[in-house]
Length: 353
Image (tube, rainbow, N blue to C red; front, side, top):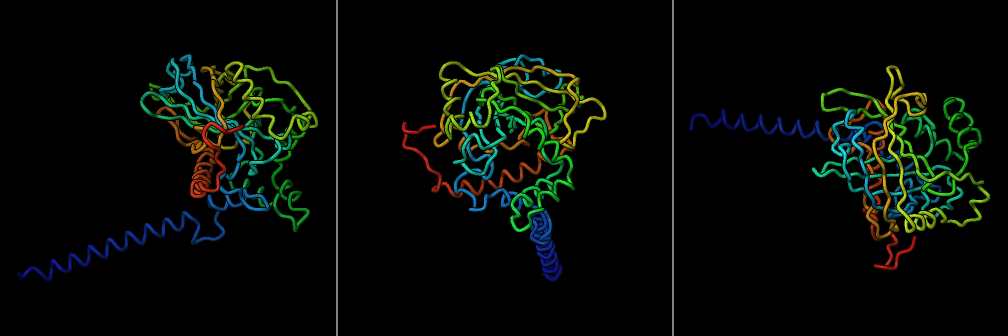
């Protein structure tokens, strides 16, 4: 029994050490969440800033809230296997769950009033690994950093200062480039006619360990039909869902996956800067959309299209947006799943687009 005091002292030291570790972990988590630094940008702040003046629509995604689900396949031709060892780049067919959507926090927005359209995908390989990606039809992003994106959201919502957006644009001249695209690029008549772009850069690693910075696009087989905003308004508030449903019922809709390979020196951390069109391109296969389902009961309803969910052979680059998007998507996902009772599901068999 003579060693009991030593044993007790050792136990106390162990408990103190455990307590210190726990406090350190809590402090680290608090810092990560922004609790100890109110001025720090957090995922919750970004998600909060996405809400319209009347508040978020409960049960829905905090952005890209209006959408419709689909299922299909990615038919890989094997050409991208030289760039990445991702299993879905081996020649073959891989199941896809996806979502066409509009960049708005309002699930009841009129289609003709939303400039940016999106495509989100989950491609699953036989080994269970997944590639998730969320893209838009713009050729570049409006701002260069997540902090600037938050500032843009704040400026656009600042009704007390009529010069808020003007001041923000002056400090972020890249926004003018995006504004020029939004004001001059033709609108199309269908989700099926859009080219969807990753904008963010990623790193592909092949079987020999070689890394290559890339971006990608899904290029439509359907010929784009330029229409005016007034013509779109005449088609009804939800014409995009109706149109894509009818098209897919008539025939599968297709997009070619085109991977653009960066040259040395191409900017990989700034999605406002498009790479020159003469960069090497690899046509990796075809996205085939076989069935459309309303989101209310559809397979994409509870999917989080986190762009950092990547298979072996792909990883994020120095672009800060994928990590920021992942964190914000997680906050949005947690909130809307907690509001499940507020989501307007339809009776089985009675859903409409």
